[in-house]
Image 1 (cartoon, rainbow, N blue to C red):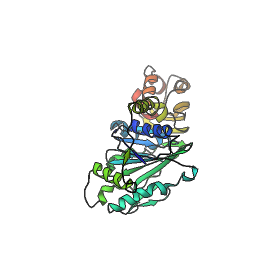
Image 2 (tube, one colour):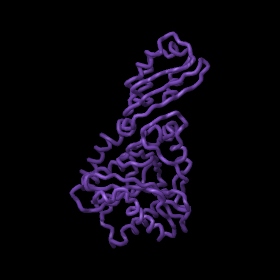
Image 3 (cartoon, rainbow, N blue to C red):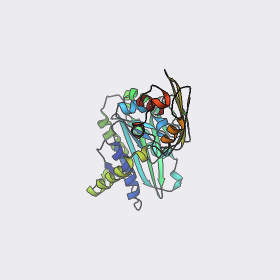
Image 4 (cartoon, rainbow, N blue to C red):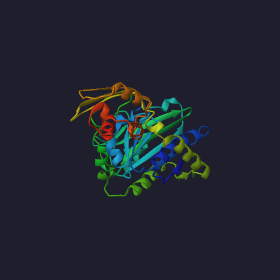
Amino acid sequence: MLYIRNDSTNPYFNIALEEYILKKSLSSDKTFVILYINNPAIIIGKHQNTIEEINRDYVEEKDIKVVRRMSGGGAVYHDEGNLNFTYIIKTGREDVSNFKKFTLPIIKALDKMGIKAELSGRNDLTIDGKKFSGNAQYYHKNRLLHHGTLLFNSHMENLTKALNVKKEKIQSKGIKSIRSRVTNIVDYLPEKWTIEEFKELLLKYLFEDQGTINEYNLTKEDISNINRLVKEKYDTWEWNWGESPAFDIQRSHRFPIGLIDVRLNVSKGIITSCKIYGDFFGSEDIEDLEKTLEGVKYRKEDLTLILANIPLNHYFGKITTEDFINILI
């Protein structure tokens, strides 16, 4: 078993690192272990609808990164108080969904620290019935990637608000996250360690049976390839937002000029159809505006650009572009 020491806190880089090591090691029999901490980010499951999982206004206000991972499962919040662990091993499909195998070392390590944790349900770790770890897996050829979160001293208010989706009418084919009561590990420790102290102790226990902690050091070529993967995939709108499953959305708001009710179909992040209803009065045919929005990326920047030179008051009466975009997004 080899440990990859990774001090990066860039969520795009760290998720790309997992994929890179997984695919680089296809011909290897080695097991790799990675521990890392991300700057504030929401990590979206491969099959999820991004917009359905996040509080978009809060995420943008706090500059929380949104990154889609390769594995399934639900959305999780990362910050400097959360430690992530990753196993990459050679195995057959018999270990797919065997969450017990990969969480047991964590449970044993926590037990040595004086904390009684257990695997709950399919893929969560809990203390006193409260979740502190969510786990997910991705299988590729003969290699399995298992990764999980360890809420050590996360900002629970940020976690709650970032994942608190507004109650909009969304019908999605994506996999929805299940919210649970959560807790931090630090609240159960006999001593108030820092997350770095916790990380080093956890590492020691994970390698205890092996005797020594053997490391694989990332080369300049490795880092260059990971950064390329970040640029081409993990830090792109197409991957993080456009990969969302098809979904329908209904948004409405009543203005002094009347009710505006927008219905959108979105596929791969692109508006495929648009219908606008309401009791407003306008001098232009609303169908022209609907057609203008079709084919546009469902993100604020693109909608702002396409609507910048359109006289919306001709369609609705007195309304600003910002008001209309706030209905759409």
